[in-house]
Amino acid sequence: MWLDLRTVETRLNTQFVGRRVVYLTSTSSTQDVARGEAESDAPSGTVVMAEEQLSGRGRFGRAWVSPSGKNLYFTLIMRPPLHQLRSLSIIAPLAVALAVEKCTGISARIKWPNDVLINGRKLSGILIETELSEQSVKYALVGIGVNVNFDVEVSEVADIATSVKRELGHETSREELLAALLNQFEVLYEKAARGREVLREWRSRLATLGCEIKVTFGGHVEDGLAEDVDADGNLILLRADGSRVAIEAGEVTLRS
Image (cartoon, rainbow, N blue to C red; front, side):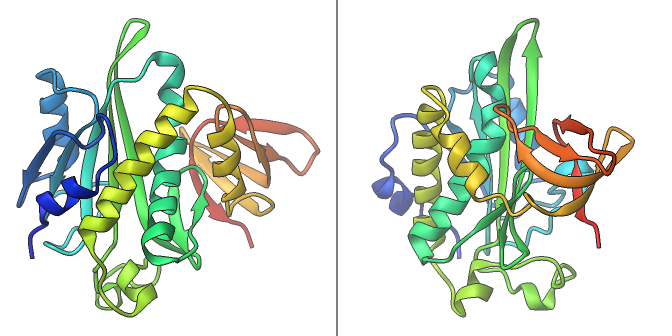
């Protein structure tokens, strides 16, 4: 069943996020379409969404399983000031977690930097791509995928992923979840511009902190204890020798 955009619109409380929607039944990737829209001066807050992605991708170029008519696949076009750019990787997963809890009552956690988990399984992934022009942001593409009514058990990601349907035992309204997510995103975006409240809330949900982990980034590997995060959302890793390193972004695996 296709998404009812009118229902989404009636539930939006935003000023600009989600007020313009490019809706596609099928596309290669919403990131690709959104990039073209952004280059054509689409306003900040524009949503490019699809019922199906033929070449959906996540971080590190991984494929994102995108069955038709089941989940949410969309990209937000944002045009933040440079000093607020990093906050998008905090805002996006937190908006997903808050929206899921509001609509379903299910508690969600975040795996640093921005995967959303339920009971240790991946519910949502975030991919952020940016285009800079000298010292300013031309645009940022915030790609969000949320497994909503996906039958995860019969898929190739059954061992590592989950969906709202799997957790609840029944399907839920994609329209309500999308509207709640967009509402939360705008609220958090505005809050992030004013202070550190959003960072504290994101930190409180990090499932990674306190765990022995291995982080892979830029061809480099670091092992240690995920001790904390700094004001920019970088992970503070405590090495075995007692030294610390701040890591901007990376692939995290738990170390047994």
